[in-house]
Image (cartoon, rainbow, N blue to C red; front, side):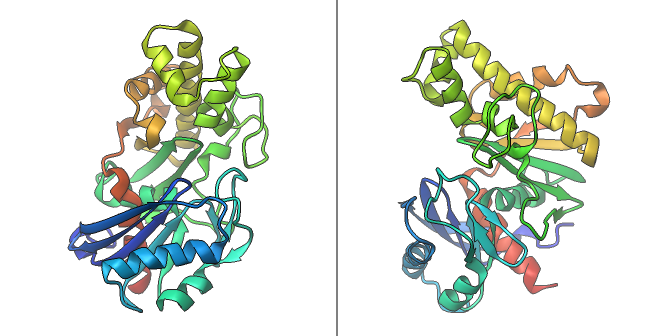
Length: 302
């Protein structure tokens, strides 16, 4: 039984990502109204909060109404907001997000956007029947969250779930975290584009690399396969540590046609004990919104 049943989710939620900011009014576990605008990646934190406030006002949010906020970046246990990758939300430093949200909206909770998506998928989506669940989003970077016995794994420093920063034997370069040879640096969109440049295809982003692979171009297939193998090895490592039974893939790359099959195939290199079920995330862009509000309502009842 999840700590917050889906039909008990009533309130407001916002999801501030690197490219878009969404806000929604949720009633009885369903999004009844949603607004989305582009994110100004260079804006200072106060401006980002003001942008969220504008959307919430249009949705009818009143001061003190239930509100969960999900944001890109690291959110520590005290509600501090920290940039993880300088290329995303470059105006964010060490900022008291929780305090600013309380001042702006009366009451609210905040957490990382991938952690919020993981919480929702673990409670209501792809991991709803799982005891030990991981959500991995493979997009521009690689992130995620861990839901163990219906509880989102969290930590005081806010690093829990930042699975893309784990070392990979297939990687050679640094990712945005500053760590060397990480899963993100080889499996995420930036890493895929960097590999394409190194192969002589400087005009190819991750989408173009996938299109080239679909056309049977060997150089592109090797890059995509390497990404999938890095994610499969990550899944094996997480399973060894946490005893995972289910992993859901999300994000533009994680949900790309054929990628899940590539990861499943790569996972056959692992012994059977280290092969959990791998499925697609099922809640789509609603996941961070549901997870953020669920986090608020869980906080209210504890």
